[in-house]
Length: 192
Image (cartoon, rainbow, N blue to C red; front, side, top):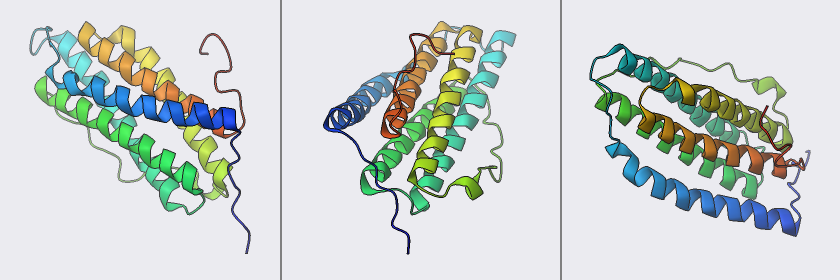
């Protein structure tokens, strides 16, 4: 029987890894505590508000995909205890994002889009812990890019601010996963 790959994290990486996870959890709780009371100044029913609702719906779908992806990773049996703990923690962050987005869509009078019945995850290419972490890192990088693209499209600046907060969380996830994979956690001064 093959022994699962072990995640080797240097003391410096361990400090960064644990510190980011603890900071992220505290920041997420503090951030989300006030966000359901967003000052939604856009005129109800306006075209701009409908655009904001569509953007939020797309973000909600992406968060649901991330929740499912982390569940796949957790259920895979490929993650060592430390990586499993981080995956479940990050999944919880995505749940909080999805709940915030769903509540905001409801507050704006919108309806949630239909979730896909199944996601086309590359299950056949997830053979070890590194594969699972790389898959998750790719999703987190995509989330950073998506939120960065969505922020300037919001008419309501409070929504743009909330999306920027979620983007920061996604970027921290991506950095932690890159670090766990032995990669430079921040590969450049600018995201591209």
